[in-house]
View 1 (cartoon, rainbow, N blue to C red):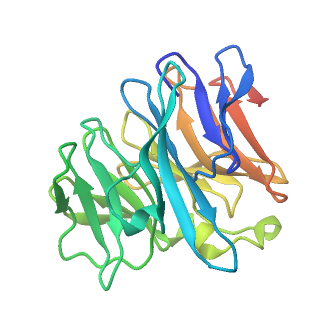
View 2 (view 1 turned 120 degrees about the vertical axis):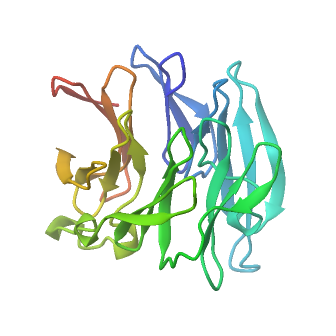
Length: 261
């Protein structure tokens, strides 16, 4: 959500904008992006990822930026491979503009890059198994799903486990969901609690700083959450996918009233 209350989301074919009055329009057409990022100036960033075909079996990508006046430019021109292969751009950032990502190799390391381009390893001597979704607090505390566990990487690089395997739940209607996708998007509130879109359970789970886990929202079949956020007024916004890969956004007001877009 930008400073004017516009909400942006991707359905993997284009990026949509929901205005404060509920009007929905396409903000960026014909882009396949799994992540979005809004900076303090309301510039929206995303990528476009494509597969050339079985003849070459090659992938390519580019990173774009949409300014508040709706000018669209590429900040990273089209190039081969995946964005993670280059380790020069991440959508996971803190208030200061530091970028965070998982550098996968023989040993996975959580890395950060400062706005002036200086990289450094953030995690030290920590063993990760399968790092999936990552988010960062405004102060630079990193939270991530490592296999079935929610972990915290402090600004001092110390890694701790916040919650365990009960997060990666799968119910009967979500039997097709791979374990690595059972928990998808994550976000924070102002108190530092972590919220998880549990796609495999059709639930949103809250994990507090004292490690208590609770369910704060559920979706009805055939929908399940893949991401979310809180608006400044406390409304909960969810990105939801159906079993047929239809996409919708849903706003849950503090009084419990729900509206879909």
